[in-house]
Length: 186
Length: 195
Image (tube, rainbow over all chains, first blue to last red; front, side):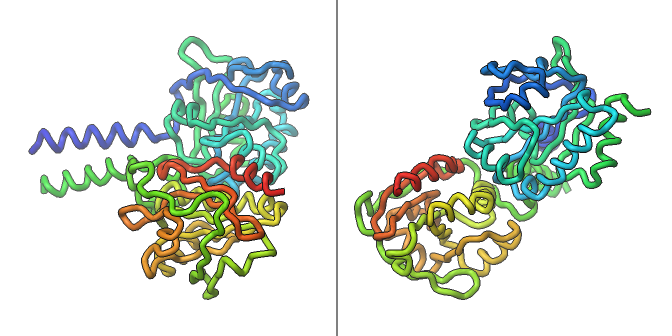
């Protein structure tokens, strides 16, 4: 009986940890994304506008904030305007160009990502993940989920500096939190 | 004590097995069904048939009759298996975002499950509401789903999309894997084909 309880405990821990957001100190796989990118988005990411695919580590910035969303997720829908505010705040902050925002549509086709982008007038780049490949690589996190990584990373992957699942609340406070995690603000 | 501990741990394991994409929707109110037989029914209608008419009670108290849309609007019937289940709980909120796409194509969306109205009320409220009529095919149980051939052996409807044109003719039928959310672009392309 004790053995059964111990086995179940291990199973529970494994199951829960599989769904947890990537923790600071861990590493993300350097995932490959495919376009399309607008010329402005390509320029902001430092990626050739003609590139058919690119890896996260190729983004020309010091830090990348990933938003894992789904157009089907009501929380993501409610948060969309706030995330736009965050993007604008990042662009006008002292760290403009050093921290970039990029969205991954978990389980969303390109069509579905476009619906989300157009509905909320999202200015930062969004990418489709129709078969959940990237979502699985990220530990099947809930949505929305925000993961701050350092670039370009190393052979272990991209270092996770901060992560949050759910709404981030106050935009300025979250921006400060990100800057602190990135070591840009003491 | 040991039994209680085992039950607790088992519950944690099962709860954590829910698809992550629904995890934040409302973890305490989403019921994981696990991986189900992808399809468990045989169609009783085909493309080109007149869509079987029906009248079903809707949330809000109205009775919705399919034939009321004839000559006026295209109709999409969205059958989903059950309230408070993971895939259904993000398919319909997604259609909230897609509302302009339906309206632009002069199309009415009707959501149908075999749940009763009180359950549908609680579920749609929990999802933040949906813009389209939600119909209960609860009693006689699954009669409409059965007429279309999308009633499963367990009494739930399939995850099916039926496109009906203004003349009341069925123009497409997609019975999707019950475990997967249908891709929106494919449905919109089917509506574009009605033009």
